[in-house]
Length: 215
Ligand code: ADP
Ligand code: AMP
Image 1 (cartoon, rainbow, N blue to C red):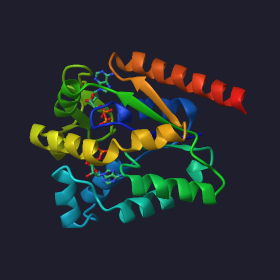
Image 2: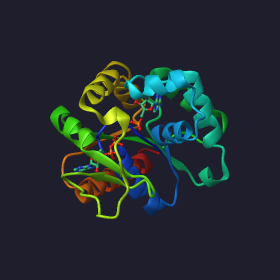
Image 3: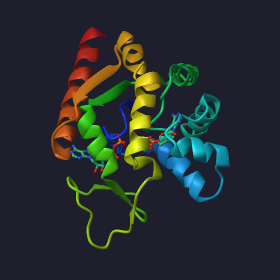
Image 4: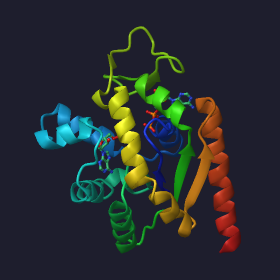
């Protein structure tokens, strides 16, 4: 199962990816998490850290090479879920080309849809447990008292707005890109985390049945 989660910041991609990857036994590959980890280890060039923390996108070539290498690792043999990649048309084209070369095409793209005001509220009140990577929300998913909370530098409201603008300019073009090739599965992302998980699983199941019917 090779899937992509496509959506704006705050749509719930990371939250849902962790649940589904746990259920299906496939790795969640979050480019944002990988980049934050590189930064924490002092391995991300300072100009890329600045770009990332100001809400811009990092160069396509670097991200494509990262995903090419990561998806060849052993734990991806049964599939993977990409969270935060692709974000541009060149990244999406490169992903198709690399997976086609391997004879392992993408099975689908799940796109949770959430209105703008909720996206801002979700991102600005997001907190992450430094030790476990668990994602919390100060109103909707309050952290336990022993959590060691981190605030992402790019979750300040100004930067969230910039990231949403970056999404609208570059990443939203991927919706028609994947719709044309019938791989897009849109899901209402408003509701409790459990409700959204259930919607994704139902929509994904329906898509697989449709694909089997058409084959
Ligand atoms: P993304 O990876 O798309 O940026 P996250 O999964 O990190 O989004 O979620 C953003 C914030 O919204 C987090 O604080 C998370 O706890 C919260 N959140 C995620 N899904 C829901 C939901 N269905 N209802 C309310 N809050 C949610
Ligand atoms: P995320 O955790 O997915 O919100 O990503 C955090 C930040 O990492 C983004 O705002 C970008 O600066 C950078 N980033 C993550 N994935 C990509 C990507 N596929 N292409 C370019 N930049 C990325």
